Length: 141
Image (cartoon, rainbow, N blue to C red):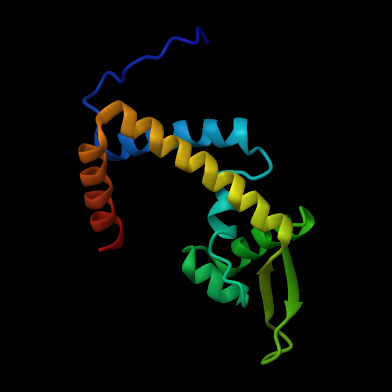
């Protein structure tokens, strides 16, 4: 690799552009908040204070229960989440954020806020506000 930033040969389509933005985020997170991978962050940020079952969490993050369970085990091993038996069903596991998990989320959120600030500086406050507004409408319906 030469380290030279190349432009795609084809006209960038939306998924390509979104991937490029995500690559920027991933690089910043790896540098400034390396304790969590973006995929782990995606799961961790869905944990409400009262906890959530793994099957409910899997539905929120659009994963299989088995796949989500693997992420939960990783997060628990890192001390970012705790897993207990659900009061309503001994077969169900409830996942809660730990203090270490909250600290990791706070650091990650600071990195994401810094990215927002850099992009605002690049394109201007109003253009970035409209971009975020449109993106939220597309993403959230």
